[in-house]
Image (tube, rainbow over all chains, first blue to last red; front, side, top):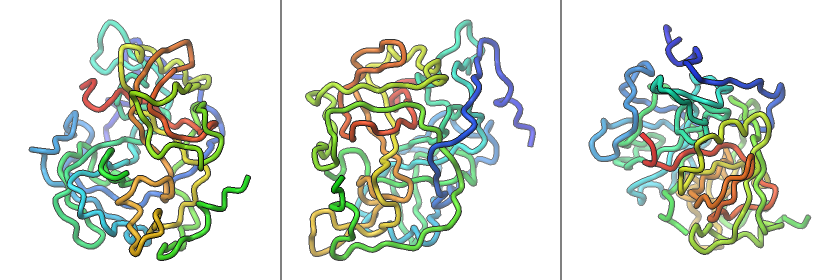
Length: 153
Length: 153
């Protein structure tokens, strides 16, 4: 892999020393299959109307939790941006004159690299969802699937 | 605390055996202050227009990442629903005739209890955000703050 592009600090970017202990743990409950094999290929933002179809594979024993998902046209996906560094608090994605705080961005570079996307749900086949609207790397670990905001009380 | 209400399985609910190893780790980057001291008091859904003002405290060294946040009227908050069990894949929140899969719900009960809310940003004072639209317990751990969907490219 030659992914140094996003790993080296750019001008005006600031990294901080991070705590030596974590506070909580996640399971990867599945894997996301997309057409994009490197970060450079990924679109800047998913397109739930015109983007390519992607597959979300939910692992055993979690797939039991998919019951009833098919009635939703759109769902929220949380996933783990596993290739991003976690200590950069000021970012300069466009090599501009000023950097922006990480929390004012949606960049993969953040302390807890949990991404959130709303996708269109096209099909459910056992533990496999077919969706449109993702923008992440092929092989991205899945963290959660939720009914869309406002879809259920 | 007498919080057994949400911990015992209800009729038709199903729990699964969980993996004995986790896959990723999180830092709690701050703490959320709300008026609600028990799960029973929490509103079912946050109200970004008429809900009470809540405070989000971002810890050192992460607060540096708030630069530029004030220009956003709404932000997305990820937080950790630390009191929920993680092994229930079919849920019956209303004690109905059928249970629903966890991923077709937004319940706190899920394998990775990361909640997501869109809130209105009212004020930024150093490491403290004042927001409207949360529905979580006082003391809830903060996982992430992001510019709202669509707010920035």
